[in-house]
Image 1 (cartoon, helix red, strand yellow):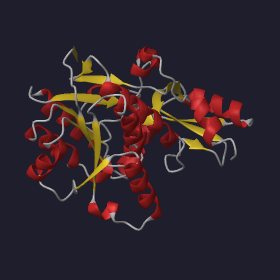
Image 2: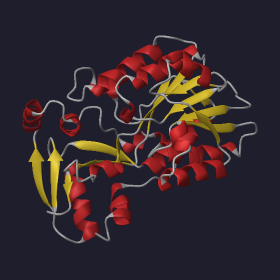
Image 3: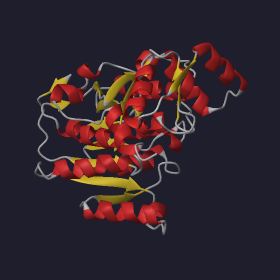
Length: 313
């Protein structure tokens, strides 16, 4: 659903400045310059702002150089009412603190967003299509995300936008995930060689999130699908061979096999993710239907990502 409602000035707060938060902040700061009255702020823990860690110091310096205002607060220790007070001065809040913040945090933030009477709330849902996956999937964290959707859909005071991105592209190639085994020139296909997965880089998600936030007419109360690429695991093996110039063997990890392994180690989150993606439901959508494709915005394909990140290896 789109509204013609115009927002002359938009005060936007981003929660977190990590792998996704930083690209979102960079692109919001860039877009805000084209919109009179738009201001960007970020919610960080005081310990992060004061940290002597070089990476955190670099990020905080960049945030300040971008003209982004820093608000301090801790989403883990603050109550819902405390968070609502932090959110209340803003028109829009965008959640970029992932599951590392804990299973209950997405609901806590959503309740605070409603208590603050925000105009628009973007929950941390940058991932798969939880509606299609449904409750009771191998990854039980996803049920908490469906609870957040139900809460937001069950009210009409605060508009919401969910951005579905598929898997972060880099995660597919993480050694811990064991789908792409570069050392042994092997692709372990989740489910089958023909199972599809949608992949988008955090940099592209940042770029496209800023486009969604500032889009006119205003986007509200809908799920926006992004797609850097939608590929099968067989495609991934072919692209690795093409770019890296060496053969890759392929092996199928069936749903039954992955579910059996998960049963032996039921708290293993990597195994939960493997089992969900192997089922192939709600984890892929056609790139031609994506927001970026409809808007003609260039994004990074899997082949380009391999070229940029793996060639030297």
